[in-house]
Figure 1 (spheres, helix red, strand yellow):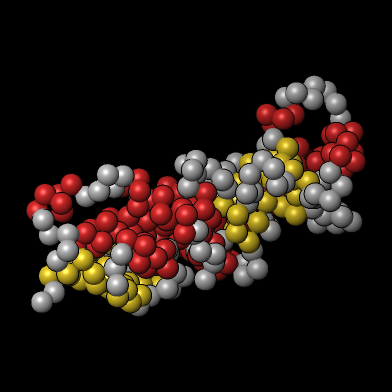
Figure 2 (cartoon, rainbow, N blue to C red):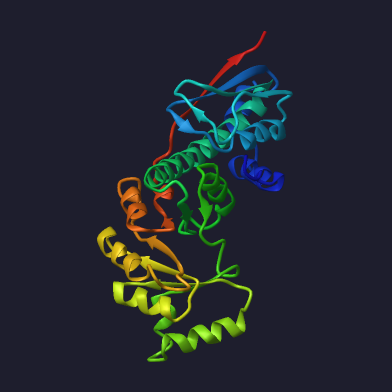
Length: 283
């Protein structure tokens, strides 16, 4: 299991959905009536955020919550995720937040796992890294989802790593690569240096300039293989990363072409996988 999303974050999710209470439950005067909620997978999925769903029901005031499945497990359609008992007000407060959280996170985790599986069918040691190109404000959920799917974060943000893109180099004019690489080394000696390349020649040039990782952006697998072949005998061959429209349909091709790392945003575009919620009155 990966990390747990903080209690404060989960409490904020509940407050966001019902800042002034549950109007329907209050109007029906059923808030204190005891009942049970059951959450089940509506499709086969790599489950994610089941622990947070359990916590949401407890935070809402449910007295008896039993989680059956854990994040990271492959859950078949119809499989039970958790059951919760408590007053109707607590069940309704938690249900939608728990449902939506697992539907979104599990879809991302499931697609991440598929991409990783396809890549590793061609190269068992390849690493799949997911970008930070997700909706702002949901980093914790997206990180948990891609890690649950067996991938790693590409970058946590602008403050944790060095990645030189075309947008950075637009401000460098005609300065040779080896010069700005040296300046970056001097300024941040403990950081690995990743630089984006947009052609075979550029990738080879950057490798010889001494970068740690050459991230080839939108090169087709055939051209990526040219880069790998050109650097076969390089004494300090950098890590070779393939980026740009990497998905389950081409992950294996890039792995066979010689990629050490695949960089992808595709999991974030996965449509939600249904989690079904049923409720019944007790007694």
